[in-house]
Structure formats: C-alpha cells, structure tokens
Image 1 (tube, rainbow, N blue to C red):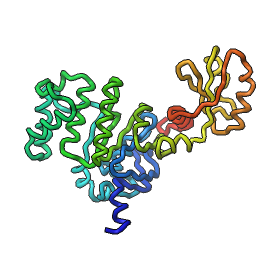
Image 2 (tube, helix red, strand yellow):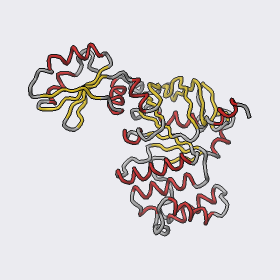
Image 3 (cartoon, rainbow, N blue to C red):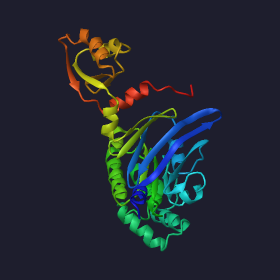
Image 4 (cartoon, rainbow, N blue to C red):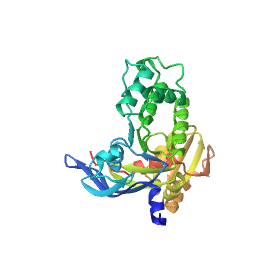
Length: 314
C-alpha cells in the first residue's frame, strides 16, 4: 500500500462544490469539506440554514444538484445504495416502536439488518448502554434520556461506519447529554465517524472539528480553537450596573459587531479592533462599570456569525 493509499483510508468523506436547491431556493451553496475517519464533526448554524441537507448530501442520502465527492470510499452520486448500508441515522424525534419493550425494539432492528444472533446482539447493546434492568420496559414509558440511549443503540447495533445525529439531545437534561456524549466519544475511539448537528455550545466543543453553516454557505470550519482564532474577534467583558442600557447604546456603533449579555456580564466584540476601541472609549470611564479584555468564546463567534448571516428564505 502506498503512502497515498494510506492517507486516503484516513478520510471518511471528501466532497467538492456541493449545491442543492428546493423550489428555486438554494439551500446549500458550493460546499467543499473533508471529514477524517473516526472523528466527530459538528455542524452549527441557524435553524433552516442547510445543516441537515448538507449532512444528507455528504453521505449520499440526498443527491446534490452539482458537485462531487466520496463517502466511505463510495461515490456519493453513483453508490448511494452502498453508502446507506454503512450509515446509522438518529433523528430528533424518537422513531422506534413506543409499544415494544427495549429488548424487543433492539431485537427487531437486529433482525431487520440481518445481524447474526439478534438476541445476543440486543443483550450486549443493552449492557453497553446501561439499559440493564429496563429490558422489558416499554419504549414509550422511558424518559427522554433513556429514549436517547435506546435510539443510539438501535442506530449503532448494525455496526455502521458512519453515524448521523440530527440535534440528538434536544430536550434532554445535562446529565443525560453528558453521558450520551461520553458514549459517542467511545464509539469514535473505536473508529466510527460521527456527523452531528447541534445548537449546544458545550456539545460543539466536544467535537473534533466543527463547521458553521448559515443559509447554505459554509462560513467557518476547523477545530474549535481554529474557528475562534479565525474569527479575528476582540472581546471586552463588562460588569457592573446599567448593562442593559449600555448594550442598547453600543449596538450598531462602528466596530461593534456583537453585544450580548452573559449572566451578570456583557460581551462586546468586533473584528475591526481600532474601530471597536474608538467606539467603546467614551463608555469605559463610567465608574459603575468595569471593563476587561476577554478571550472570545465559541458562543461569541456563533452569535457574531449569526448576526451577519443573511436569511435567503426571507
């Protein structure tokens, strides 16, 4: 095997120039991307901005209008059926049978995918996901967190090479979300590639790489550190009295790209550092407020990108 061949095996998805329109509206525009095998790749962006469409095109579930690429070594246009055999898909909405037990749901999925010894496979998955003792509980009676675990078990039981997660933890408590992500990292450690869309910043920070998509356009991608550094944001953190009034006064001033409250503080950010400094200078002498430099957070970057994204469906 050549060095080039070895390098190619490290790439799960590589696409160039993907575009997709629905009813004359472009949902994804000229998107190019590479995803490494065994990585967790997170997609962020406003609702309706093309994240799910992008994910479906990347793995051959949706045919692009233009562009090309491969997923798991298969052509996304010609080999869509082959790709689907290696993909697990977990949607926001719980899609298993509510009136079947945990065990029955998993055994059904195992048989559906032709898994050898469905009972044993279901039993091992129940143990792996901490569902022991709940085998005979009806799926419809599970809490949100337990339903989530069951859905993950059903998606990964056929041993897919690629897992798609569409906002999988919406409405789930923080403890259950953390446990879910621990399992995702274990699966990625075993070689599974994961594509996930999320609005939670703490979840995005647990991804190996992220991409920010706004209304069909890929605006940023890379590690969390790369995306934050690439934003070129300078951020000031303001504490004290009168922050609400200050926010209104600063909004729209030259160099001020983002003003957002964070708990008892106010984050003021901008990419034009000189213009930002000039705009905030008259306000920094107020003795009721304390200004200090702060490192921009991923949420700062997310809000700033969102503020300059144009909704192409308006």
